[in-house]
Structures are given as structure tokens and as C-alpha cells.
Length: 368
Image (cartoon, rainbow, N blue to C red; front, top):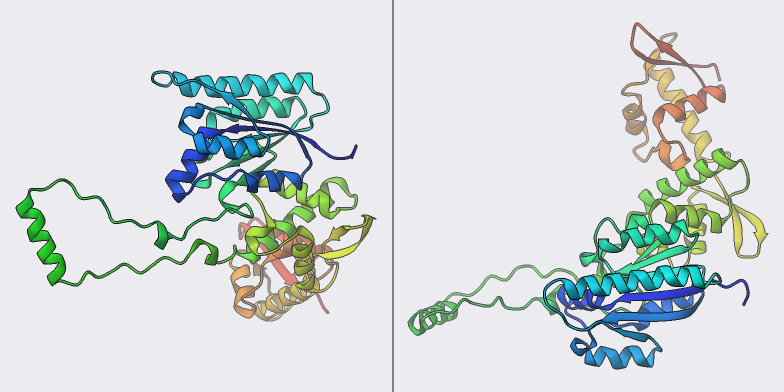
């Protein structure tokens, strides 16, 4: 138990409830958030801020989940909103100073006004997880957090399909004679319906090739910066620092380990036994695809040079892709095609020299 994170949960409830209602046409459900946080540690504080006279049914649901309800009475204009934001921010900072054992703060809102609070909590050495409805979350908030969870993507959130939420648009008020004429037209002429959008649950998974590039580059960067072993847990933390909204479930995988095993099967990374069970060491393949790519570069340069000539770097990548359409130096962990060619030169595959006359790098193939 001592190794578990202690979590303090703060909900800007009006922002969440209205976001779920306006963008999905459903009532907000607290349970998926509670389940997601249960996987991350012990939630020792649960507070929700709102004028609860507007959320009577929600109040019962939250009380059953042991959430402390902080009442923000109705006032005129924007004062009520500012009062809720300020009260929530003050309580969070106060708790950060008073409860040293709380390591993680979860700020449930999509409002960018809470970005300074997130920065302050991280300055106080607290991990900050954000939660918000995707379409009502400011673009400024997720990058400020250590991790950001979109409510819409959490396990257990039932989002109706576009078809189910599409309603008939309200008509402006018309005279009775106009209404009668419109009804006759609608009965006489068949209405061509728009093609129905697929349900949200059937949306295709994100591009795994793009993920392969991201993982390979991240592993290469970690190996280059520290020189030490790269464990799966360290890799996951780094991916979340790059993109706090990252989640392996968006790519169709149940766990991060399952994702890594898929990438290992496709020779993007190699897995070895790590310092702890279930936390393997991750590295880039020393052979395999990289050696194949170096061989491809050597043969293309040799063909284009037609003997003793040299080949310019510009346009060379397109020539490699003509021979092998799936070629990508980024999948091998290289940030640029020039870095890939420099690695090939270091391995003795080609010679790489800068030419002032050509204003470009020139490559020549070394004898096999």
C-alpha cells in the first residue's frame, strides 16, 4: 500500500455535465472516472463543485460514490462561474501544502482557466492528471498536464451514435398556410437522406504506423540521452510527456505491454527481461530491418551512380521508396533521412561527403 499513489480528485462539475449533455446528449457518469483512477492509485479526496440546485439527480449519484459536494450558490452574470473556479483552485493548492502524502491531483474540467493551477501543482512536485469532455476541452489544458484523459474514451462511457443523436432541426415559426404548404411538399417529394455516420464504437483505430514512428524515435532519444536501459514503464511515461492524451487503447490494444509485443513482432523494437517482472527492457533492433534498409540504400546508390559517380542526398529518399514503398527511416529510430545516411556511413555502407559545388551531400557506395 505504501507504494500506491495517493490521489486527490477535483471536479468542475458544471463543465463536465454540460459538456457531456451538449456534445453527446447523455448525462454525465462518474463511475468511468472512478474506475480509471482506481487503476492509478488510492483516491483519498473526492470533491465536486457546482450549484447543486441544477443537478439534483447527479447529486444523488455522486453521493453514492462518496464524493464531497461543494456548494457554489447561484449568482448573477459570470460571478458564479468565477466563484466555483477560484474555490476549487484555492482548495487544491491548500491541499497540496497541507497533505504531503498526496502525490497526484486529478483536475476534471476542460476549462483553460485551470491551466495556471496545473502549472502550480506541478511546480510543487505533484503529478497532475486532467479529465475533460473532448469537444469542450480547451487545447491549452492537455499539454499542461502530466496525463490527460478524455472522458469520451474512458471504458464504460456509452456515447450514442451520430444517428441516435441526430434530431430534426427546429423550424422557425410560420403562418398556418405556410406550414400546410410545406407539409404537402414533404409528402409529395421523397427526402434524400444523408448517409449515416458510423457509430462511434466502430471508428477505425489510429494509425499504428504513426505510432511505430513515435515509439522508435522515443526509444532512440532515451538511449541517446541517458545511455541506460529503457524500460517499458519509462517509455510509457516519456510518451505521456510528449502527448498527455496518449493511450494504447486508441490504437486497439488493451495494455501497453500488448502494444509493445505487437511492435516487437513487426521488428520495430526488441524486448528483453527487465529489472522487474512485467516491465521489460525496450531497445531498437540492432539488425533486421536496419540492415535491410542499409542494404537497400547501398544498392540504390550503386545503381544511380552507374559506376564511380556520386549521388546527391536530395531526392534519394524518393528513389528508395520507389524500390521499397514502405521505407521509413523514422521507423528505425532516425529523426531524419540525413541521420539515417550518416549511420550508414558510420557502418561502412556508403561514403557521405558535403560538396560546396553541389550545395548538397554526395553519397558513393562502398565495395561490398
